[in-house]
Length: 312
Image (cartoon, rainbow, N blue to C red; front, side):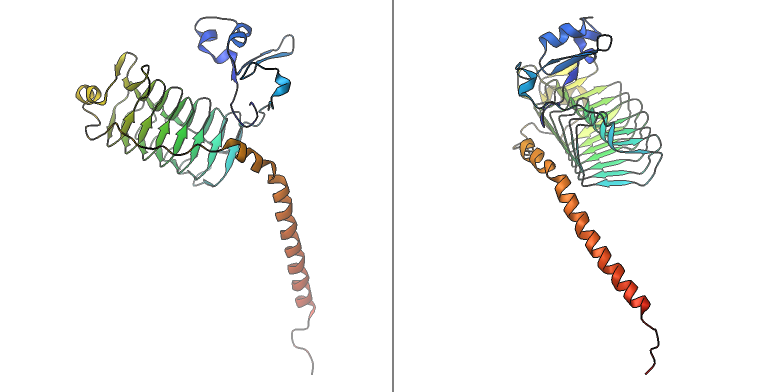
């Protein structure tokens, strides 16, 4: 991470390396905010976000895999946390973590903001998820009946994503904008329903559907820039206007294109400054609780030492 701001990308994960077979070191040389670790020589190569010397940046190494992770634990609610710079996800509902809820959390700088893998009936509601490398919310591995409601998502690669037979999903009342690829992406996952979502200024397309059966209506689509699409169905079928998409797909017949103002982005420098004071606040809180516990224990000991029926 470059301070409280952006996650750096591993050169080995880029299309330049994977498809064009460009060496990772050459990828780093031409792409800001990328890095390559040479394991043989034990050297780390970094191309900083602005090209200036790394000494002028606050660079943070990510070690922790997830903020909160559950394996096969059901009926867990994760509420009100802020997660920053996790290697995989801020919240990870993993393998049989059915009937779980993530509500009113903030997660940024991870690979996925909230990750749901092989877990059914998981609700993700009212969260703010941004600047995650893969997606804000990701249901995959047959995570059926996954619901994303009332979330704010921006500057991820994808906003809300379903894949690998994660059927019967629901996306409703989400705001997904300024993503590097898609606002909502449905891949190999049938019967996902979309309703009342706002999808604006997502660089590739506002909606992407690939080899999936879906229903969609009452959403808002707004593209900015010539390279963006309203919807992309499959690899090659793309629609510039909502009218073209409606006529061809027979979806979103009540949807619109003028979406109005978007939610304000979180002030990361202010959030970063607040997190620096967390340890001090926690120590004060624990100290107050300790004093209260000592007083309570002394009062209980005094009461226990008193005779129940004193003689006159």
